[in-house]
Image 1: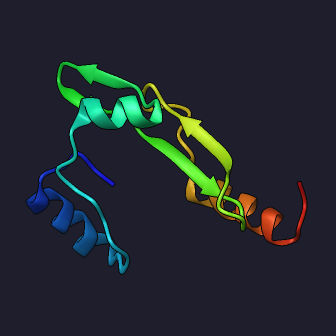
Image 2 (image 1 turned 90 degrees about the vertical axis):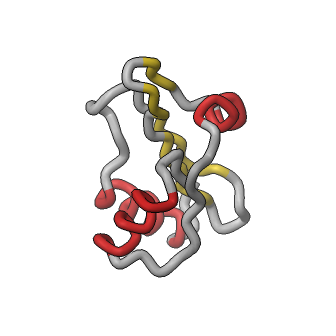
Length: 89
């Protein structure tokens, strides 16, 4: 999901060849309140919050970023997913 406009979100979807539904044009403050993500006022934007779900649908990993450092990378997410698929806690 994204607070980007529909046009910007479509550009990202096209650039990354994403084939799953992507939410866009979401209210920054409402999303922040709902999931606990950090926001910035100048310029106004929502910082990333990344989640990996366990097979039963619960949150197995949550990473909240307040800046460019500390974000979840794809290889780390894949490692966590593989770990969960093996049935480890």
